Length: 317
Image 1: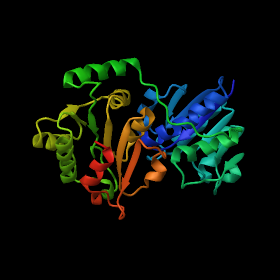
Image 2 (image 1 turned 90 degrees about the vertical axis):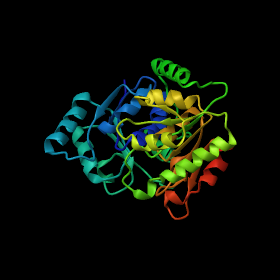
Image 3 (image 1 turned 135 degrees about the horizontal axis):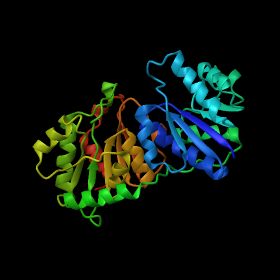
Image 4 (image 1 turned 45 degrees about the vertical axis):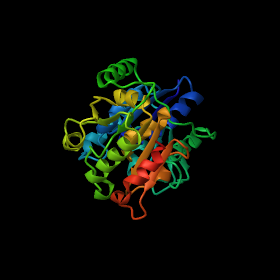
């Protein structure tokens, strides 16, 4: 049996963008055992990924010491992997994977390529799911990148059905989901202003007064949803406790409106229309070229410049 390890630093969105690579790897090597090493904050995404055997965590961006790196090396040696995929190109990780004794080490061309057995040219201007998928060239896989696919647990679908009933939502009629700026963002250019969200909601209610609007809430940061709820009593509020429940709720929606984020990638995987707002990053890298995936970016790189009317027009409602 082929044992493959993938090292995937980053958040939930990075994992979802890597899913097509993992899926295609399993298709090409159906008997392979596929393990991943991810940051603790990203582990939750594998609730909706059916092709991974083990999810191991390592704080790539945190304060890690020699003992932590030594444990990671020991983990790789103990499991005797046949191949490893790394979505980077730096020499420190190249040394680490070499020390693990993994015979086939695949990464992008760069400063660390001396320590990798197979290096792939980095095309950073393409959709990132395709960029990650290029790594499979080191495994002899050269066919096209599949679309993001997820598998929602039945328990999460049952929760979504109960939640829709609680909120008075009809799956035949559908509903709008707004997943706003409820997570702290490091770059202020990626924060859409509260006044903009209020205008978007007002515009949706004027255009589609009978179509329910559901806000996704995070109890740790309640100010965003609380402020909007105070402005409109007709809004619905839902607090899915994991990524599977959120995906199941998105699956029943007509459209999702959100900043560039993990929920955006969930909508793409479910073929739910998404209108995503971009500040510092480019839609071409984060979204596929598909009619249901709409990315709006200001010409200044500041997300607040995107007008509510632009968002409303792109919803098609």
